[in-house]
Amino acid sequence: SFCTLLALAVTTMATRPVIGVVIGLIVVFLLWEPAGPRRPRRRGAPKPTADVTDAPTVPSMTTMVTTVAPVATEVSVNESLTTAANPAVAPTGPAASPSTDPPATTVDPTPAPRGPGTRKRPKTDIDYHSTEFDAAYPVADERVAPPSREYASPFVRPGKPPVDAVLLFPFASAEWEKDYLPRDLLPTAMNGGRLAVRAISVAQWLGSNPEPTIGSLSRGALFNDTSAAASSTPPIIWAAHLSDSFPPNCPKRVLAKLRYYQPTVVLVLSDEHARTWCLHSAIEMHRRSDGGANAERPRLVLRQYSKKSSGNIPGRDVATMPLGYMSGMTLPPYLERDVLRIASKRRLQWAFIGNQKGARKTMIDIVASRLKPFVATSKGGFTPLVMTRVYGDAKFVLSPKGFSRLDCFRLYEASRVGAIPVVVARPAEAHVAFDTFVGERKGTLPPWVFANNWPEATKMMRKLVDDPVALDARQREVLDWWDRVNYHMRQAIYDAVAAATTTNA
Image: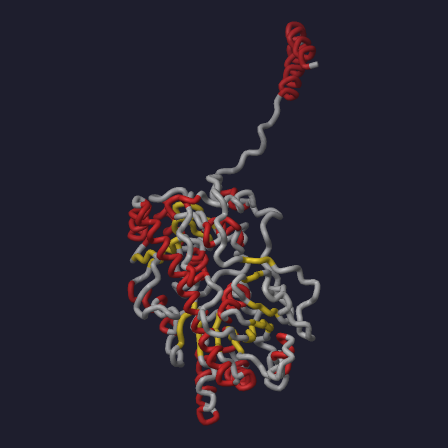
């Protein structure tokens, strides 16, 4: 027993001190129980373990059909989307998704109250790598105001008929946009109708060997339609990638695609370095071809990165669309729109996750000297899900210039979860980048924090932190802007598809 060993140690100390000390150490070792591993209190964190969800894989050349009804449904990009009201919308033809797809998960656009909530929340940086807090909804008095029912509704034009469309999306090239556009935003632009999604190649597409073929895009093939319109093709939305503008793809292959598919909407993706002049020129050439017969094909052109910031890009009425968010930035339950925590009750004063090079190190030092706590780290060990958790618990997210532009995904990833983006730029530069979003009044900027330099930005952040009412009001403006600009984008796409549907009827 421990008592016997202790007595032996005391007795032995008198005659054999060394042996007595050894016996005493054995007793201490046996009695000592560790209190558990300590969590490191440091910025940055170890690589996340298996509790972090990996980003979804690129879908194969199969069809994904989505239908949005009063109660929408949502699953991953590899699964067929159906509705509770009409579970049989998934196609059964040769282009259908495999029958082994898991069942869809119902998502109510206006969720019921989630109960009283809890004040349990992350306390250290390492907590953002754990699933422990993902269901810890904020208490009622710490939640943001719910979104407008207009923006949350799956109907973008109430009272108008649903429409069907097919999206041609370059999954292999547009890795970052594959959740935001095909899965989350575009299905609800159909006003309760159906959206079929087909993968399209950028570099390998040839006018003599198109993939997918028009035959595979018929309503019968896509939606298992057996009506008289089964052989017709629904309006096409083409997501064109930066690579489409490079030789030998442009202009020959781009013009071939435009003539073959006659898209109603073109979305121009990934043009961070302003290199899609040829692509936009080809669109205008196509519109002027055949004696003006293609003047409305496409009816709508939206692009990432504003036209004004991209040089002398040709084209009329080219509006700016948000970059959206990186694929894999799944919202944990406590970060869904209706239960976001108000800014004044968030743990982190600010966050920055990205490469810490050159001027960015100076930025971090300046802001860190005035505002704590914060998370400032490189992306190593931070999956998209972990980044979402961090942004969802931060008052502000710093957004320095990217490789060549002010515009970057970080701005929209932060806005989506109620963190206020902070941008340093000259006023003229900010307007060139951000005042032409679709549906927004020209000349107006998003309600982010804009400053001329980081010391000035830090003072503006500090002023808001010291005034919780003003801070929460600014956060509401950011969330309302994010809801509104996405709603306007869906409306513009619906209007174009609905007009094309009427014309082709």
